Image (cartoon, rainbow, N blue to C red):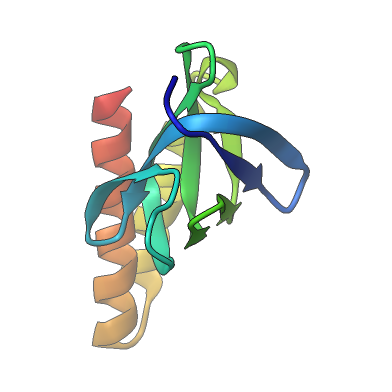
Amino acid sequence: MADTFTFELVSPEKLLLSAEVTSVVLPGSEGEMTVMANHSPTMTTVKPGIVTVEGTDGTATKYVVFGGFADIVPTGCTLLAESAVAADALEAGELDTRIAAANDAAHAAVGDVDKTRLSAFAFQMADLKAAI
């Protein structure tokens, strides 16, 4: 049996998951990363994407996150999401609404830095929609 660690997925609304798991795949800002027991201490930003959690029974559960931070230590991982929902509970038009809002914000932004950041967020959301 694979080593386990504690994973917590927290959004401002609620604690979505707190469980012993064997692995978690996160959409890190620099690329996807797999977290397993005894992982080196790491803190990373998380871009919009899908988090795949493998439970101790081997089943995989997916969550959609809309950015955040992950704190990884050898005994656990905590993902503090800006917003998150179980993938099977995502409402049909929610991604379209978020993409439109991100595009509107990018067009309304005044500075180049804000325009670039918001445009990148809109593209990340579009990639997320394509992945689902």
